[in-house]
Length: 311
Image 1 (cartoon, rainbow, N blue to C red):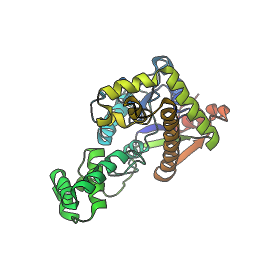
Image 2: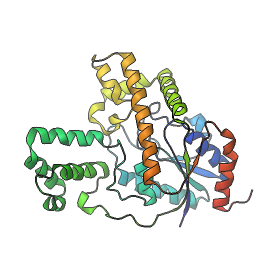
Image 3: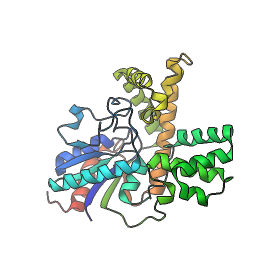
Image 4: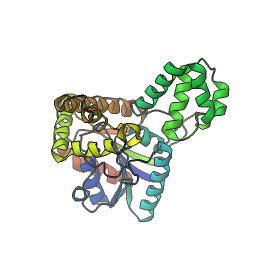
């Protein structure tokens, strides 16, 4: 199998810095494993590496979609695999880095595309629950029948939970629920997986500080342009750091409460990310570069040994 390096972990633990340092030392190229970084103009709230931070390292799956576009995990997996092949063809090491666990698991083969990343589809689920409350079970089932007749045939009209689940999976992946693989097969790649984390309180402090930095860099203006483009109705507009602004822009909230909400949601998301990585992806090698930056050479040496690269 093709060898790849994967760097995962919650927000604000140093994944980007490690990926670039590793690419510089091991002749690598970076593939973003973040579901929001594909969107153009959303730079601050998604914590994209700036051109300066990229340090001349080739990055893939950044800025590939307009904010009005939809994007499924199936598309990401397809494009990531193409990027891996291209990087290897150039004699380089593919380094996938990001916090969208469902994307990473789907790429590796650890999870079929019908899986679900914690928090990724809360708005989809809420939308269909609201539809159920307003129109009833039969109407909900008919919506499923429109997009996936095979699944509708097998799910009773009154099994609202499974119907919502099937609709949710279809919207998230672009693949009908009835056509989703039911078992997880062998991994698609020989992957060395690095997990970055730190103590909970330290992590939360870093997340709060990152939000403050984003505000200084212009997060409000970035969120406003997304809002004016239709943010609440767009897939790109559901991201943390953006959706919290919408009531404020509609004069239904104050700035302090908005910022506090962004920080709270970011902390909660980091907790969900960690839960996902610990339970859904196998064989992660965990490190704490926040409190132990001296581990950087150790990590790179382990990766060098995995790749069988001599110093």
